[in-house]
Length: 219
Ligand code: 3PG
Image (cartoon, rainbow, N blue to C red; front, side, top):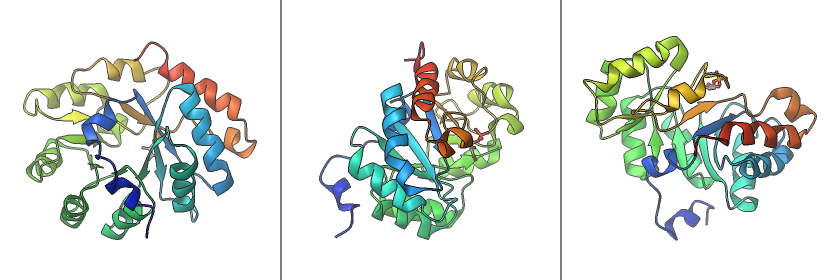
């Protein structure tokens, strides 16, 4: 039995539900699995329960499993999903959702088959149209700042009014509230909530404070 079976016991939230749960999704790169639970607890305590753990470190899946097991108030997803196998591992680790930097036909088909809420990355209107053709209406604009930032999102709102975005990549603590004010933005993603130095020094109080700052005045 896998931890993924936990998901079949309760109704699954939609990607839109998850995106509207919190204004910021911390993008987490975890080197030490023992950091996972205190990190998740600090972010949840600060008011940011939706977490993306990137598949960029050897123990990322262990980190996800630990968070799912020990921090029930966290909504834990897996990011940097590149291959169908990454999606299958996300399900087995108990992840509530998955995020990719871009979309391939194989990823789209696997996400639909796996019935895991999926947030594919897009950078152009054409990529958004392809994702939309697969049925995905919730998309990550990535890398958001480099793709044109707020100007791009405003331009996408006209022809693609039914798409809701989570811009990620280059979003700063100073700018993210302006992104959230756009009608086609539900939340933003960013790595600034868990700076590498704070993780290395296990400064959970600082991470909680960063989360609380981001959550303030945005709910
Ligand atoms: C990433 O790929 O790491 C995310 O897009 C986060 O980007 P950021 O570090 O610019 O917030």
